[in-house]
Image (cartoon, rainbow, N blue to C red):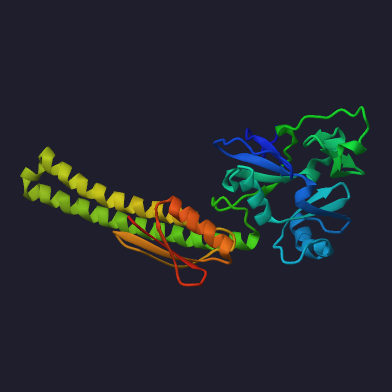
Length: 311
């Protein structure tokens, strides 16, 4: 078993697949050629990151206009294999089949293990995934030999490398979106660190003050009084925990293309404004926020979605 697949189930994604039974935990998904565009080129580049920079220009003539593609590159003998796929389209298809994009740990492509399809794998009653001249392809079963035997698809088909789903938002995101979300999460992390240092200093100062009080007023050493003091510390800790939970929840609304315009938070409530690229993303952000029992409003006909709630 390879390290990428680990113990996660692997599901083969094709156009006519049935609804997937609801399940808990993460899984891996492998796309058939119905979901990606592929081209092989012999290039004198050594590393995959160098080849990936060339992917848009190499695949440009094969792609549809107006679609924001992501790219995946891997080596196959003496050639580089360039793969383009539509992450938003894949995410929407997975959702339509009962698979939450946030459940998918790794996304693979059938071409990565094309040799395993030398024995065809049946997709449904009419189509099969087969190996044709070194390329994984979906063909009608009527084109295959009458006595062909079909193999089974399982976790052993998982290759070592794949596309990692980011942000923990349930969406497939591109590198640019990952950088944006990563920057926002870094700012959140810095906020946590600063707040943690402040809380530590406040706690130490309070502890020193309590020690002095205990010296001057021995009666404060009673169990009842100590419990009251501990309760005060506990309240501060609870407030900080609530803030961290809210920030974590808000980061889950950062879908592809969505940007956070403003954020404010005090001891009682919070408010954040998200700038969405289109109506589809507005609907998704609104649905996710309402699912967390937050108040959601929209500023007129703009793409700004305001999310508010209490701590």
